[in-house]
Image (cartoon, rainbow, N blue to C red; front, side, top):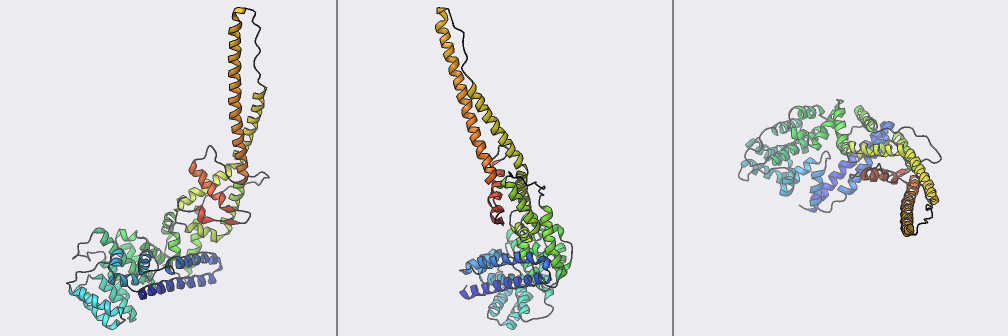
Length: 461
């Protein structure tokens, strides 16, 4: 494929992202209550454009990105490129029909005519291809897209036909593995759902998802997200699926690759509900009394809690990280629990230090015992050995205890100091929980009012 194709892909994907961003801007203009949410989503779209679209250096990069992309309206490019490039065709599950069939011959001629924008002639070839093999879904897709170019009315019914045919053995004359069948089915269903979204035929998407398509297609993320999209825009119940998306860490994909409608009242409700869902599922931090010697972890935890309560952007960004909701909740609860118990742990460390310092003073007062004077000359040497050995053991004991107490005092001083600057490794903490807490503490700056969420909620957390 040529650089011309690469430019076409960049242009199309850039146009899709730009349109999405413009719609979000309009939605935010209509309702100030969701303006912050739309800003966060637009920020993710800009990152997508910089990292994926503008970053293409080859058609291979573009092909790989197209396969991973969930953008509505990109499936037709994948079909077009996959039909003329074996690599992409295999990648997305499109199956080439045997060269000897008349249907395939007409399809290939139609593709050449479509490529040269002779849409009326291409239409006849695709019609002939479908007539020769009514199960040639590639040809049906070409027929649909050509009619779309020619702005032919009542083209939508063909999409529903393609979806229904994926439920049968449309690869009957090929030796297709179950994986190939699944990939092909998912591709065609996803293509049709994307086009139905453009037609605003949300009822058909809901009907097909719930009654027509295979179970593995219902679990295929791009298809599931389009179904949720249709539920939202149709005003149907979607809480269960929003819960799943949050649990699985796919919220950003849902929000970024969502087909928004500026004047659809359900969009505003959806954006508000997303924030409420995140907020309701996060652990609570009890009110903490501020004190002069308050550990720094408590100050940071209080700032983090207040930020989540008032800053919708931070809340949305937290939901966007691909770590599952349970991982986020677990990490946050670990942080909050450490913050709650920090004063008691600090007091315990200070009291233990004080006790050890007192014990050191007591150890210093221990003297060697005084022995009676032995008058019997025969026992004198034996007594001297006993006195020497006893004093030796007493001094060794004092040295050992003194050394241990001093080490403990040094460690306790370090622990007490760390409470004022960060978070110490406590005996009750596992290495994992300590690392989680320290990650929070080091990436929250309550003085500068900055929280670096991307470091806190990286996948490793």
